[in-house]
Length: 180
Image (cartoon, rainbow, N blue to C red; front, side, top):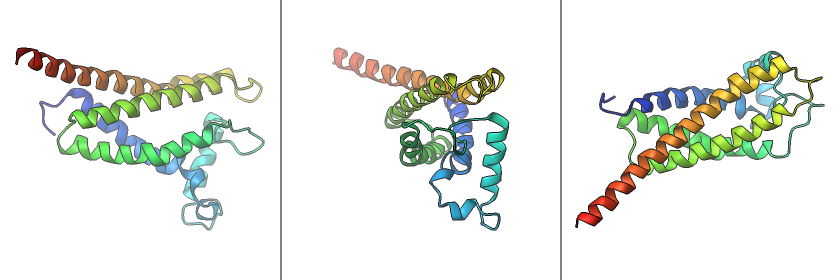
């Protein structure tokens, strides 16, 4: 990786490298056929055990089994993880490893950052409203301040950074046009 590259690109690379296993091992698991990951004899049963650990540790009601009520927007957000986050994350890792970000990449990551910030903030708001008898204040602090909060912070940082980079490009083009 070039040392002249923007230092935040390294942060984004680490983020996307972490995000990919989280997608496959946590976020997208409900979309897999249950026969592949639920029965103890299934080839990916470790995903079931990881999910049980996650639910027991963080009490995240988005992933809890019934009687937890999943909000109507959450399946849409899971679908976005599959059709948008997964391809963008794979592409971003390749782009960040191979040569950095150009204007097209910055535009895509701006859209990614906005979408991720909005969906994460929506989930955080919903989690904030969870019944304290089900999810304690201490559990909410960990969920909102740590897990979801960190994810939101990276999404906002990415959004602001890509917007700033694109604005510099546009302003540079405007300046060149005025000189001509």
